[in-house]
Amino acid sequence: MNKKVALYTLGCKLNYSESSGIGRLFNNAGYQTVGFAETPDVFVINTCSVTENADKKCKKIVKEALKISPQAYIVVIGCYAQLKPVEIAEIPGVDMVLGAAEKFQIVDHITDLTKQPKALVYNQPVSEANQFVSSYSFGDRTRTFLKVQDGCDYSCSFCTIPLARGNSRSDTIANVIEQAKVIAASGVREIVLTGVNLGDFGLQNGERVNRFIDLVKALDEVEGIDRYRISSIEPNLLTDEIIDFVASSKRFVPHFHIPLQSGSDKILGLMRRRYKRELYASRVAKIKQVMPHCCIGVDVIVGFPGETREDFIDTYNFLNRLDISYLHVFTYSERDNTPAAEMTGSIPGSTRAERSKMLHILSDKKRRAFYESQVGIEDEVLFEGDVKDGYMHGFTRNYVKVKTKYDPILVNELRNVKLTQIAADGDVEIAEAEEILVH
Image (cartoon, rainbow, N blue to C red):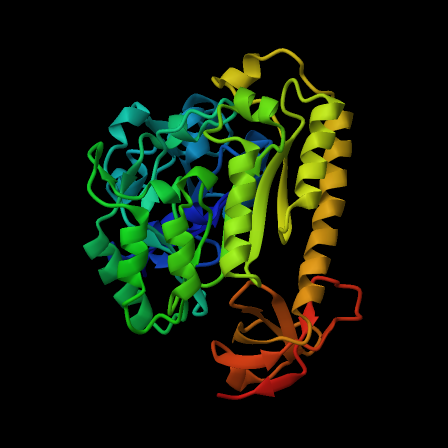
């Protein structure tokens, strides 16, 4: 009987795409991939360094894994494994820790599932993680996360990702196109492009051979994929050329997620971001000029060292004025070996929580206003297979979440719908599509 492996993923879409790729490596080696609770022989935990309390989460997952399968072999990989391998190796029950350069050779490292007295650690300096390994998520037939770029050459003062993933590097356009064709053949309708610094696509061995716009234009010609979504792109790398192309594209949808982090130029400087807020505002204005219905998401960090109340109010007012659709709010937390962790002016935890709450409320208002602006509009929805209280859900091209009464024939189908009202069931983030207009 084939050995069974279960993968548990923390963190970003990039981690999910890599977990799927690692799962396929196990399949090719004769393993059967199973769910976490299906008594696997091997647990692989793919960790994140951005997630708060990464150590606590990792310990909890290991503990739960051992309850399910006490003799299972437990391997920890991912960003946290690159940054704190010794710390992870000391967690009771962990058998192996693999760094950034080693995780894609995981099957070669697991030659014997015999549990040893001490965890095995394979962790080279992150500079050795200089090869690009392509991957994409699998299992959701509606959409797939396709990794096209890895690593980052930026040096934001709060971020450990360059320490965990190494320098910026990319897939080739030719290989991305081939991956997109394979994904299309599996029946997936939407691809979400992912990377650590997606707009920096095109670097190979430290040299720029392509630009992100070149990849976007090439993918737009691939038959079989109905939609491409850009997961996140730095404002200084989001050019007019990209915006104009998406506006006229056959397949790229009107949805951008653009990290801001702070609306205060003073804090942006302390964060070592590569723009000021005026540039950010100009990117939003440009998008709305050519795509009035475009959905724009924003990352923002609260409680950064030195952020006075005036700085926070500056950020709040800036976001309130912007024509954006929702926020992803992150509460600043100190990370070892980052310049921000050594800065003076630490913000009390209670103040960080209060500021986070204010921005979450603002996000709810922004999303509600965006959804209300879409009521009465006809748009194309890609329906998913989930069922809740007799309803199924899907997303418009511009990322409005819609629901309609469950109909199995609609799963993984694109339909034109009329957005008729905001749902009255208390979930104000759901727009209800009562009228299904079949193509």
